Image 1: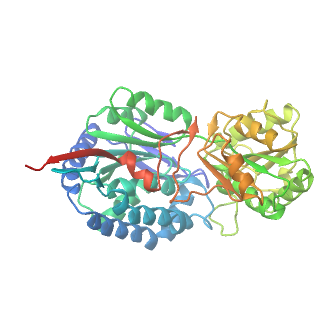
Image 2 (image 1 turned 60 degrees about the horizontal axis):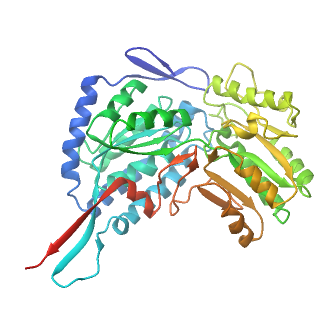
Image 3 (image 1 turned 45 degrees about the horizontal axis):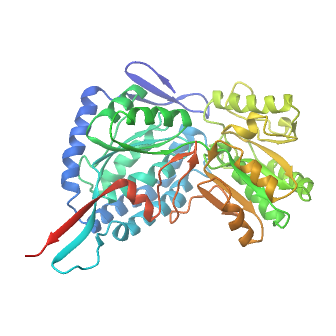
Length: 466
């Protein structure tokens, strides 16, 4: 992404070309958006939940009707293979949006208090006002839908600022809501510099900030929010672990953990970045894992045969290679020959996947978020050693346990410092469950019935009948 004082350009990782060029939002444009959102929300909050649902469902249908072209846009913007990009809309986006729409009536209903002679008492859930949603590029629709749809369903207005790598995603939301009949001003987007983001957060008309991105970005948002009595939901980084127990279904674990590590070129906040395997399974697990990794096809993501596309930019690929090199220098062994991937080329975003063994927690690749197509695999003696290593991290977004013993998974899960504990699956958000993190993975909650709590405020009614 290149920028100057007036314009920014989105550089496609596919071929290094300029794919999008847009103007930064000016002070006048920002002021108009904030003013319009404030006025529109005062009317929108009075609409019924059924009216809101009908409009949001039409917006979701717009996305489904245009999933193919949206997928191609997404491939050009961030590099994920086109064989997968339409399914961000057709699967996860649709599932999450529809679930939150369906849950709105129950989640937003008044809370009745037991009857008391001469009194009527209840608690209403009021919308907060105008939400500022700051969304990332790696899953631009899946991350943003977690807040955009429920915020609007709750009676709020939304201003979406998308990552500058994926600006067309914000514009697609505007087209969808425009086609659905959403009143003007309830949803808007702005292309903002970091400095302007801080200014918008400082504006009293912003009632809540939802940020998904890096830990450093989260700190910047937290600093901006701290100047006001304002809450922020922060979904930040991850270094998500997997533990393969002695009783695991080996074939199932290998197949799903390879996908969890390398899908989207490893650029997933809840992707698998480190794996701990019970020592009796270690050799067979590693052998199967490497063989399956070698079957990926790295190449132009517009080719339907490609299963591994470029990383988002060359700098991201270089950062991943730095983690690999540091680990090897400290004694790790790289098991995948890059010559098996002809499209791999230094100085470009095209990076072959890598599997490392002989790793330990002195290496950044096992402790710091890499966000690339590399995974370290360690042998462990037992559950206790696995738990110690899984918790030896400043992150805590998800963790997965691969076992045929559900009771053991729950027992271990109770001791893992994480927001979500999986058994025999990974890298998935169930919209019925709270999406949250601990430690440097952030704070707050989206999705599930609990996801509406941060988008509303309680208001008590205490009525004395005389």
